[in-house]
Image (cartoon, rainbow, N blue to C red):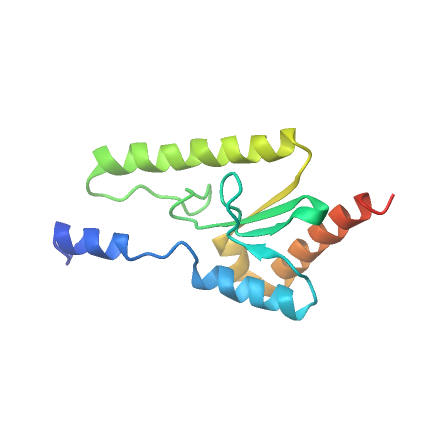
Length: 139
């Protein structure tokens, strides 16, 4: 049941920051583990984490905004807005992924629920991705 007016909901949506608390928790832990990177760099698709030296980009995708195959749901109201909006996000994510793959970058996409459900293993997955990319640059 919706308790907010359309104007209130609009104000709430506009207040959402580009950097989520989830990203901050992940990047803080990676930093503690000794990894140095840039956050939200002005690169194509604005990766959440990037290490240009190893051609690594990492995206931490929200289950709602990026329409997770497990948890993605269209809101019940205002479908004429939400369906095209979320479909556009899915299309843009594919274009961004294709761009990095075609240009030889090591891209990793992590879902919000992965971080929430198993933080430790998700961090290990990210770290292993960086380690594997780093190995490619030692040859």
